Image (cartoon, rainbow, N blue to C red; front, side):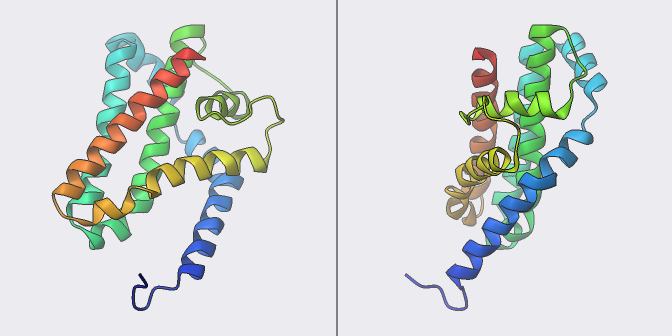
Length: 178
């Protein structure tokens, strides 16, 4: 089925460019804006499970907002939802790392090895653009495959919130296993 005015080649090329941009600097920018001391304080005061649940709820919130208005909010909200989902994934990963090691301050390169292993990317390879692209692609493809379902108001909100919540909970379980 071809939608009028929708050039699938352009959409695919734009998606590939977006993934490349995210991989080359976007992950590092997101990481740089995360307050690692704040995560330590949050885990210390709430405990790891409540902290993970808080992150999952924050991810669910952006999923609800993105899905609630159908196509209009999906187009505008999807990039913000992706950024929030990645931020929450990073926060959960940092929290679990702190909980297991006692170290709350971690360098991006060391951190990204943990993230890469949590999405089953090959963490033994040197940190490179290719690994970052693989991680970005897995994250975005996991989100993108459900994007069409988010176009239906209310149902899209429930699906978007639930998918984001479960995604963060699943990431936490993967990181805990590592």
